[in-house]
Each structure stands twice: as structure tokens, then as C-alpha cells.
Amino acid sequence: MEMKNQIEACETSLLAAFGNKDLDIIDELIHDNALFVYPNGLPVTKEVVLENYRSGNSAFSTITPGDQIIHFF
Image (cartoon, rainbow, N blue to C red; front, side, top):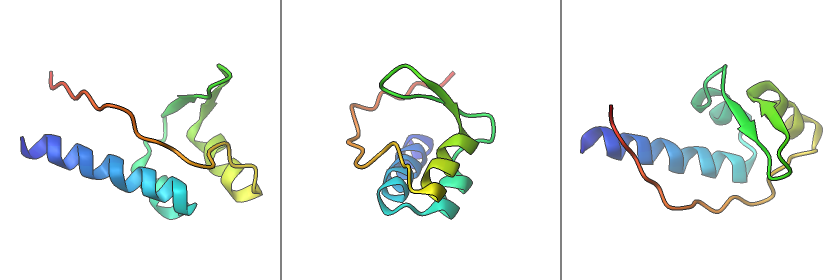
């Protein structure tokens, strides 16, 4: 249960960092090899996400968390 709480806390911190455009926290919490898929289906890397924030072309104005389902293997 403790690991699940840690994951949820990191997710909360990441969503707050996206909302606050805190690039240091975003950079810290996202793995270098992470791949995102935008709502339009475009896949982007962590570096593209960070560059969008740096340039002011952020793809996320607000992020609403969905249901979290966490499984451990």
C-alpha cells in the first residue's frame, strides 16, 4: 500500500507541475524515455513536451486526472 501511495503522490505532483509549468519538477518526474500520445494521436517524447512548455506552446492548459488503476507485477 505504501508504494501505491508514493505513485499517487508523484502523479499528483506531476499534474500540479504541468498546471504550474514547473519544468524542473516535470523533468524530474518524467522518465527520459517516456512517450506521450496527444489527444490528436500524435506521439511525442519527454523532450518535445518540455520544449513545448519552454516555447509557450504547451499542449496542456489544464489536466484533469482520470481514474487511477494501479497494478503491481
